[in-house]
Image (cartoon, rainbow, N blue to C red; front, side, top):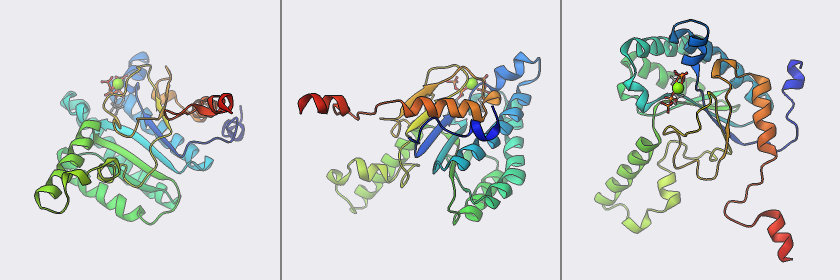
Length: 252
Ligand code: IPE
Ligand code: IPE
Ligand code: MG
């Protein structure tokens, strides 16, 4: 299939927000008799291709899970390689993203990252803050439980300061303190690498997200694979707890 054909979704129902767990780098490398970090390197290249495809399709928000709060438990050597990859992405990918009008945000607890990377994350966000193209979230040091916890702590602090009452904390108020505040919740979740789990990604925000799992290992995920996920999404009927189109018709 040609590049332009691959980028045509099968119909026009596009998600406004796609959230991806980029999993399977280690197994991709192992399958080639290479060290795990080679898989992460190939994974970073796949991410660039997917970011470009998503932007070209006009999907407004993309969130990529790059490093979870639990990934700090990996061997030091692997973490060091991953930090080096982040550094390289900051230097090479961020200027390109900026040129293409992409706005970049980092979601997660940055405090455990090396200081130079924390600074670079802030700089990338500042540089791209006014861009009006794709909004790209990189979840790094992110955990869904951490996110809910920091929101709850923020709300508790406001109560303690006498600024709000406990009964003022509703879904909207707590939602405003979460990392995805101000953005639509993910419509489509994609996990590569064959595991059927959420692994502490956006726990609050995935409440009504359509889930799509593929055995494709992340470094092999490309425009065609994205197209397959989008085509699958466009055939889902979302009911959000209601009765849907057919239910409504049968009552008429
Ligand atoms: C995902 O690939 C990348 C990160 C979690 C940083 P993995 O490293 O988890 O690859 P597998 O799951 O071991 O194959
Ligand atoms: C999820 O993958 C996190 C990222 C891809 C960044 P993991 O490989 O860490 O998830 P588990 O351990 O298989 O659940
Ligand atoms: Mg994994």
